[in-house]
Length: 416
Ligand code: MLT
Image (cartoon, rainbow, N blue to C red; front, top):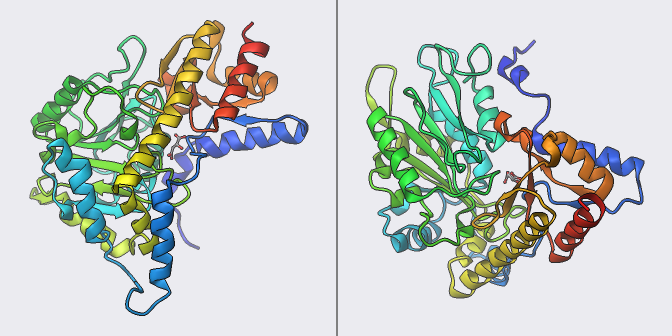
């Protein structure tokens, strides 16, 4: 009989979004006429940019002919895409990133989980102390639990584990630096779930901390396209020293609507290192390259051509329109809820609005209330961590009509 990875038994029963889907399906089964509006999971609803569609159609034609047909591509992604990424996402912002430091992949969710393959597992003397924000994108926590990065009570212990950096209204959703020494720090800005952004000074403090303590920053910038404030950095590499201590995750999911098309990339600068068992400093770039070339065969040619079109002139404009569309939804949500007397955060530089549950209620109470009375689905803040209790996340990813109807229902039926 095979033995199992017991760490899986330490996970909460279900991942947050399937659990919400389960509850919504049960409600729908009992109330078949209810027209449920989903503002829960951050999944896009609008069609792909025209430029991406044209590029992918052409790529399908390429695959139909000898001479332009492509089999396996480079595991790291085609050079033409990696070079465009460097030019538009990094050089244009003064960041000195090389094309061979970009690893194209099929999603940031996978990459943020898979990165743990190249770090020492927990449960032994070389286990890492890992800092995550609270509330947090649950993938960071769950993948660390799977990897054994938990202390006796699910937190940090002698052999590594998780420590939590609270992001609250009181600290302006700026996570405080870890109190002691940690080895790895996950940061996500613009933040999922609070919609907060990190001012440059906050990121500078983190990079300084990482350099001083030899820590690794895992920077998730999947929502960078939603930044509207010109003072806010889009990339951790806009901060001096970050190339020595940070890995960055980017995605085409939220800017170009690729959630169902799948394309993302991870930047692993050659200067970022970790410690081997024999005390040697080893470049993480080499390890990630080894990991990807062994376990991953690259993103499809067709999809990479679609992603490349994001960087064309037309593609850039169409992506801007899509992002503006969702940001306008976020403004609409913020306005409606504020007028209804609720305390609202985020939604300005991010597609998520973070709302305080009324009357001191819990997150799940507010979830049930909204579903029952308004047939609107959001995400309970407590699903993102203890500090999210009493909050609720509303996603701006839906059609204008759906958002408007949801806000009318919340305003009319619930809060008046
Ligand atoms: C979310 O709702 O938090 C997002 O869908 C997360 C993701 O992109 O995986």
